[in-house]
Image (cartoon, rainbow, N blue to C red; front, side, top):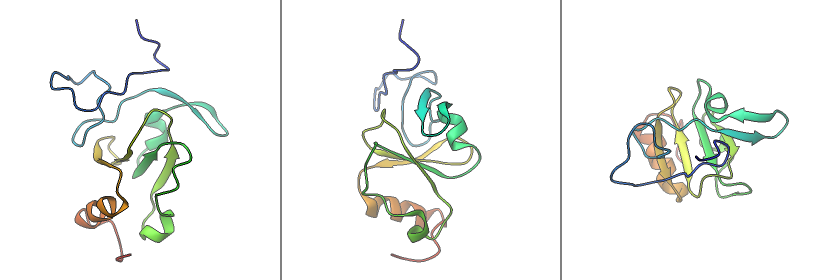
Length: 117
């Protein structure tokens, strides 16, 4: 049995089902207990809440400040991800990747960026 606090974060398994820890656009972001600054343990779903959220690896400073994106985007460090992950307010993954330009293109396509960087 896996320890629920140290999950296997699979990415592109062809046999994945809705209960797997798959992080892929179009699928729900998986629930896991994670260490959160200031609050101790927090659910990944609680970190998303009902807002657009970007998860990135700890200390990954590639991602622009939320004010530079022209939107209210919450950013969290998450040890369990090796790529940045944009999660919609309904908990579904909207984007996953490593290139800032790709994230900006996705945000523009969703009508979420107010101006071009």
